[in-house]
Length: 237
Ligand SMILES: [Fe+2]
Ligand SMILES: [Fe+2]
Image 1 (tube, protein in one colour):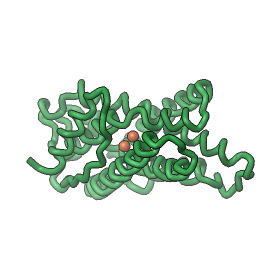
Image 2 (tube, rainbow, N blue to C red):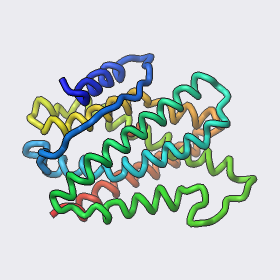
Image 3 (cartoon, rainbow, N blue to C red):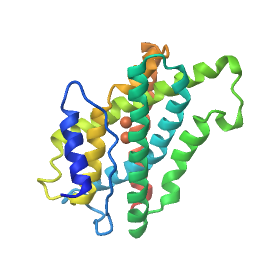
Image 4 (cartoon, rainbow, N blue to C red):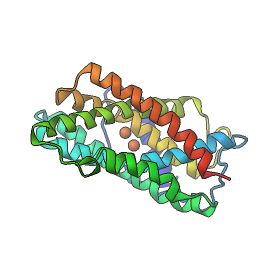
């Protein structure tokens, strides 16, 4: 059994428990022989999931930057521990996707730079500490932090849902999907389910409200739907 399968299995077991222990698992994937259409008879599904990686790479590095900034404001030890492990898990996720997907899609002629363009605009300009170079006044900096933690909480609501769907309804292995690609997405899905409440807990701990969160959730739904479709249209031939 390889390291990815072991991580996938322990993460899947943990994801089904009510009181889960968060674990940052070190993984390694080899996509050097993976086909572009890694789900048999499902070209759209293969492309859509592949291209979701562009959002995950830039998005999850952004999650980590924001959560590190929130660390000094956490007064609950259990939450501080969970946020710390959450950051470790998300860094491993982002690196695993980046290291696997970039070379793999380039090999099939997909334009990596174009696909990262929107993610860079959203996560490294719009949602930056100083959005588009604009210095946030000191009196509003905490609110700007809570706003971005709320964006992460909304995003995590969806990644948990996607993860639950991947674990319970996709049946990739039984349907003959490429094992290395399916391993990465299954492991990631399981850890998304595993740390599903952490961003929400942090958001509430910092004083975030329900109405603000509902607005973020709506904006994230639009982002995910438009982003996936856009990537699939520009990134494949
Ligand atoms: Fe993740
Ligand atoms: Fe996550």
